[in-house]
Length: 112
Image 1 (cartoon, helix red, strand yellow):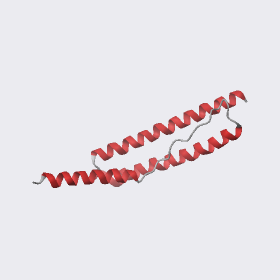
Image 2 (image 1 turned 90 degrees about the vertical axis):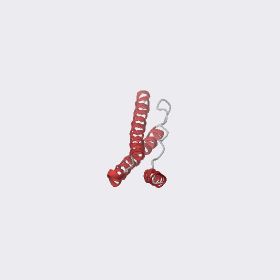
Image 3 (image 1 turned 90 degrees about the horizontal axis):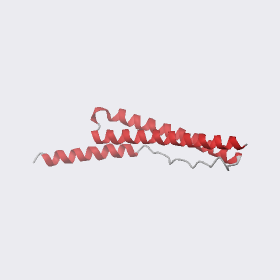
């Protein structure tokens, strides 16, 4: 008889932890122009968008860190794993965006 309430409590805590992670919002990765055909204006605009995306990404990572600190030892294993996976995916995406922008910039500079 005690198992049902404990299972319900565990599920509720897990859902709460997942909902808490949902409070941190992450922007979609920006489109990067093709440096081989982009204009100077295209590259300047992309640079601004990439900088804003990186700042937003840093805020997202900070939010996830703060959620982890707030949850402390009470955080469910599944929620912690989901938060860490989200963090790592965001870092990977930021790295990809920076790499693609730098490649586009090099292609732009190579033809100008």
